[in-house]
Image (tube, rainbow, N blue to C red; front, side, top):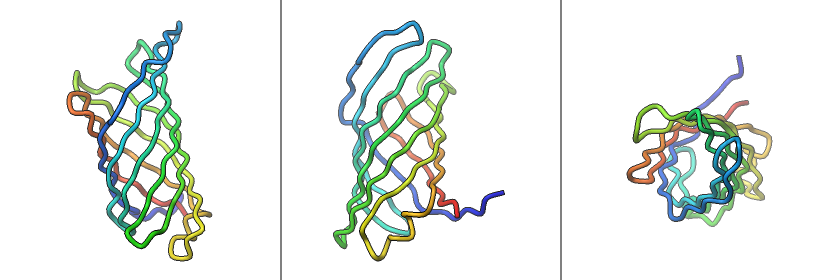
Length: 135
């Protein structure tokens, strides 16, 4: 098994949603979120998610994100994952992400892969996730 360490917790809220397309597989949706990352580094976070929500209650997504620390370090994040509806107001998501940064302090993330698991509350637009760095 891959060794992991807790990287941080992401708490964010949806700021916009766009229904892109209805397909035989489901509906394509884009949404933007903003929030905070707290853990091995603290940062403001923003991301755009492109997802397809399927009629069986599952979904697949890809995301592009950016973290900006109080020290001025920037991290660019590319993620992908899957999810499923677990209640009328709750969606569970899991996935993985990679990082790019020129930060000397956070440069070790360039070679790390992250794994995340979280819950999205549909009534509030809030997403809370735990992020783990895989070495």
